[in-house]
Length: 116
Image 1 (tube, rainbow, N blue to C red):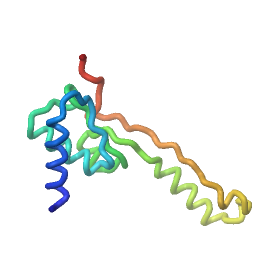
Image 2 (tube, one colour):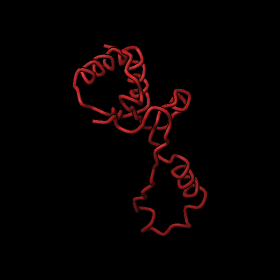
Image 3 (cartoon, rainbow, N blue to C red):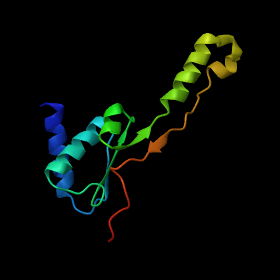
Image 4 (cartoon, rainbow, N blue to C red):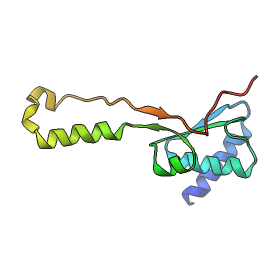
């Protein structure tokens, strides 16, 4: 079974379940599939249902999809700094886990939950 067919089945199953105000997808590809499904089934996004993805990809930008950005710029800067200046960090810091805070990029696919 192709990924698009699997996504279609998941969207149908989620659509049958009532009471949801948002679909939070594991990546932008899934969220874009969800947006396509909701458009075909005439569900108003974000008025009736919000859709959010992860990765903040270029297709998310062009589709006006709200997406979580993992802060790739900060991750790449830290990696390049380590490659260019590996001795600037002590042995303890080289093994230390570095946490990079991401952020939500709000676009047109997410909004206030519909009133009750």
